Length: 341
Ligand SMILES: NC(=O)c1ccc[n+]([C@@H]2O[C@H](COP(=O)([O-])OP(=O)(O)OC[C@H]3O[C@@H](n4cnc5c(N)ncnc54)[C@H](OP(=O)(O)O)[C@@H]3O)[C@@H](O)[C@H]2O)c1
Image (cartoon, rainbow, N blue to C red; front, side, top):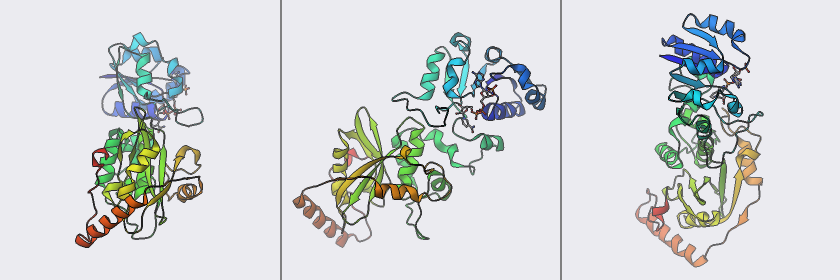
């Protein structure tokens, strides 16, 4: 098979090398022209040639796009791509490396508009080029797995499949990288992981912090779909997991957590919304604990939240009765379960 590769940098250059190694012929292009690619194609051997972007598209039955997303309008005319399989490795980052908010669209939908008669798939975009070069085995860093976790529901299922992180060996605040490495998560680690994963799908990385009168907060990933709010979350209590996007306001969403929050000491008395992009800490993929996130959650303003005392007392008694009967279980008897994600 013949593969055109547009972009000869980290990803394009590495993929071209792997394509050749796998026995394919490649034509590689960049923005500066074929003469600037001599040393790369020489190192790849006789199955590789340097080309202009137009020639690379014509050459390939499959074409890999590996240039900066913000320069996609410079790609050859859309008609040239007609009928071809296009692999889009590009991620929508600005020139200073921030992800671009595309609203309801996705980066590949935007690329597909430029080549409507092509068959376009996303690929090679969720792992660093070094991982790709090394063979991207499952033990490699966590970006590898972003590709299959494409919806809040899937991320919720994945988080529920992980054991809860009870922090037996001391407190942790791991990013998605640490969660994948250790295979467990507590609520804030789960919220950061959901934000990291779903940001790649265009969801703003926003968390909702539920404050409780016993100071045991719960943090969930907050998202919006069709104008309604939902959440993705992990907790020791099944009633505090994610919610379907069924709530007209964040306050309504918070209300859905009021009853399940009641245990011996818990009762929601405030909430706040934090856009993680406002933080300087590397909350996405730091290999270390990111205590700065916790500090930001403590510092940033919360709204006070009141719920009915009578209702609280009713649920509190119900909780105590339940724990008397089933000391080792966690209640799931709440009426709004159809709205759990
Ligand atoms: N780096 C990663 O680990 C990684 C991982 C996943 C996805 N990605 C995505 O892959 C894409 C490429 O990233 P990269 O790290 O490989 O970038 P890079 O190392 O900077 O390479 C970019 C390449 O694109 C070429 N290019 C730029 N504009 C072009 C144009 N209009 N026509 C033809 N070629 C053009 C550049 O050629 P010149 O040098 O001649 O300008 C260069 O060869 C990005 O969209 C990025 O988001 C990167």
